[in-house]
Structure formats: structure tokens, C-alpha cells
Image (cartoon, rainbow, N blue to C red; front, side, top):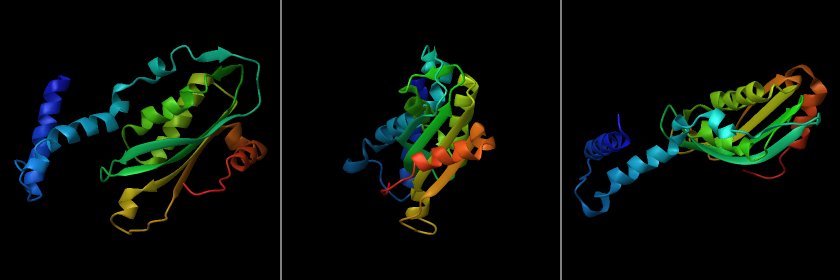
Length: 193
């Protein structure tokens, strides 16, 4: 289906949703809402239209570096697949190279690609770790994500200060307590999200 056809179909669905909510899609403030919401969902789900191999491209370099590489506090926003409500927070990534390193800017791009899909935080965390482990073949990968879920804040239990933390540890991050501890110590937070 072409993008134009899918956008038109999505706009019609949003117009129907507005009617189901008891609104009048023809009133002034809502006239452009279906188009705006359609564009918003296209943006929020752009990760489905991205390929990790193209994203990484030629940013894998041979390097004899074998100490931990960490990029922390990567902001991310995603949509909870259960309610289509945002969750957002910080992602911390580390890996121990085994002859190959990745251009540092690619780590946030990988986070962005997977977070711009309908997600659960657990799967998002694992997808990032698995992708890095597969493309770099490092000694180990560690990913920790901390997020606030609007589905917990705005509805349901309505707990404003809840933060969900997930982790994925592969290779030496799973098997070596010292490596895992070093990573967790280095990303320790001293401020709120």
C-alpha cells in the first residue's frame, strides 16, 4: 500500500475515532486533527521503515581496543503496544570490543530505530543488545533502560514517580560479575529522569 493511501486510510480511522469519542470532526479545532495524528503516528513508528544494516552502514571499524565502551543517558521515546501511550527515559549501553568498534553516534541511532516502533520495554532492551552483539561480535554487551510509562502515570495505578528498569546482559556482561558491576557502577544515576 502506498504511503499516500495509508495516510488517507489512517486519517479516516482517526476521524471515525473522534466520532466514537462523541466529538464532531467538522468543528474548527478538529478539522486538521486526523492529518496531524496520522503524521504523528508515522513519525512515532518510523523504526518499522528502517533497516539496521543500512543504519550502521560502514561505521564498524577494526580496532584493537578491548576495554569497555559506554554511552549513557541516551534519551528515547516509544509507544507502549498495549495502550498506544508513550513511555520515555534513558538508555545506557556498554560493550567490550573484540577487534571491532562501532561509531559512537550509531548507538543512539540504534536505540531510536527500535524505540520508534510499538514496544514493550523488555523487548526494546533485548533488541538493542542482540543487534549490537550480532553486528560487532564483541566480548559482551550490556543495555540498561530506565523509563516512565504514561500508561502507569495517566491511567491504571496512576503512580507518578514510578520508573521501570530493564537490562539485557550478553557475553562477559552475563558471565563476569566484575564486568557487569563495573558497567552498573559507571551508569549509576545521581539525578532523576
